Length: 292
Image 1 (cartoon, rainbow, N blue to C red):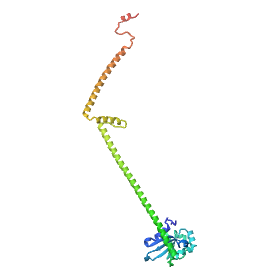
Image 2: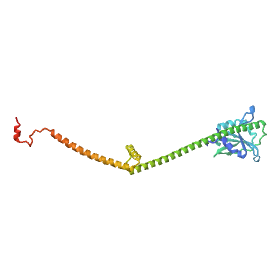
Image 3: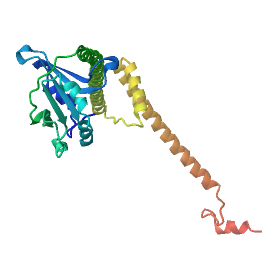
Image 4: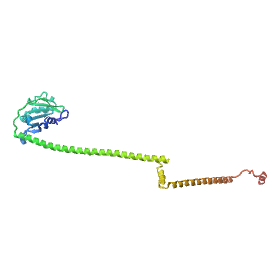
């Protein structure tokens, strides 16, 4: 590729200089004839089609290195095969310095890129063109046709690729947007649910006096279920009071019974203990009579 230091293609700069909206048609790699009559090729030829600007053909020799330029200068016949049909002939180089010290034909102008356009390093003198041969006209028309067909196919493919890429990008953007919206919506929904549940638990704990933890949730739930299933709350309250009173009476009776049992156990233990000294109730005389 004939690229400039800024990465611009020299062929594109020629096309920019000879714009279609100014009446120009640009042809690349144009042979000097068709079939076996073709022996040379011009890098670029630009045809001006507006009569107001003068119907004319301008030639461009594009060189990207000093070595290529030196080789071109040694083949004068190559340029002459096309230059004779042109009103001007331009040498296009990526840097004018490659021309220094070389004998550039006086009937060649020199163009070099600067800030994205081709500027004139040396003007091209006006040439008097010969009448076109039919073989050259056929070669020029054929090159234009091939370039147009090839460009049309490339443009169609590029347009399809661009359309497909745009559609893919749109679908991806929609899915990403929908995904973000769904995630944000879900987050709001779940947060709202959490806040509602937390408030319910806080209200229950405040009114019941119960603290629901991770270890007693089941027990509290069972108790609440029993209460919720019993629809007659006043009757349930009376039943619970009666149960409480009955439990207190039973507890009191059991405490009395346990006290009596303890007294009886103490008496029995005292009776079973052996006595080694005479009882204070016995007299000394009676104790002597009992000795053998």
